[in-house]
Length: 214
Image (tube, rainbow, N blue to C red; front, top):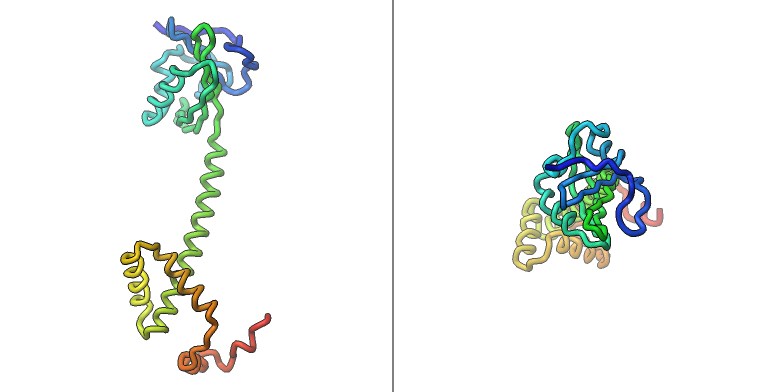
């Protein structure tokens, strides 16, 4: 039967006093000890519940449970780490990195680092980057659609269909093909007289000389 170790001494060689949440397990008798910070991370006051293996695992997300337990129980004396999701007594989910090690007497210990805010911040940064990249990609594709429509005298929808078909046939991304088209037209800098003459009325007398160099 599992019991609670009420002992604040660190375990292992050159292990500093517990500052991060720390837990300790003695496989020989099934006993557990949590530091005050570990109790708080799990949403408890010290001594609120009897610590058992079943309780510890119940707070780990089912998808992460096997990886966490395997890393923890298989830890050597040299620290190893794993990441898992922990749900506290209030139902709040935490992203946690566990640094696990085994003492010379076989006792297992892990320092738990709550990285929830870091993960959220990184996720937000990546989402912002991806949204910006997606917007830039869409803008390039829209430009290529317009260029193809003007070049072949078709609708923008048909211009997009041309891009899509070229992408499927060449196994090159649609964005890459669109970028190539836009870059070619910009680098070529050749005036298409018939198209320029047709568009001049819509520009109300404004021409390239009026805006270049600004």
